[in-house]
Length: 308
Image (cartoon, rainbow, N blue to C red):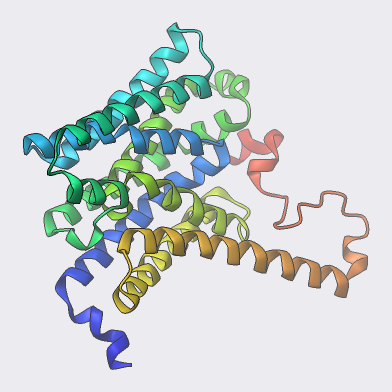
């Protein structure tokens, strides 16, 4: 037991755990919307869109987080601009900019011959190097994320299922979409140091997927996703410490495994329950195979009432 608890006596491990839990809160809230809205590709694209800014900031000796934020914001703005004025579909705009930003980042990295170590941290994260000022920035990002999510909750929910209803209610669906993209950008930038640009979508998607197997309402899903994300951070860091693996990939892989275990467990329990009580499900024609179907996400007609 003493060897198991040993990492908790080390300062950099505790800082990494605190920072990782804050990232889990951000990704739990934003990741829920990413899963509901099907925005996984956007999150991946923004993650890679940070590469030029981070690489350039590292080469020039500027703050890396600033470079990441500026590059990710430029990526988000360019996607919206291409979609509106270039008459391209949303996924086509993302795909084009995804390749362009990734290529630009690799060009900058390849131009610097002494960039190998920094590139590894950039791609796969360096959560063990989190400092107290990084934790303070993450805490601010948590407050902003939660505050914006609460303030725009009704708009997000209604827009997710019927933009016409949102317009009728005066909820401005276009603004809601822009704000949601901004939240995804904040989540990706905040998570980048923990798991890097290649693995950032793992923390955005996996905890939310794990949570949706057990929850039926959006706020509950966010809380559960945060818990799953925090568990992934803790278990991933412990795995990294005791097995000597890379911390970022260990966290991302743990998050994915938790999602798989969660979905499998829910599916097994559902099947066992139906075998024991077949009469209760004889007339149920809304079979999802993994979770209840009375979620507000799946009942668009009830959304305006529930989101007031």
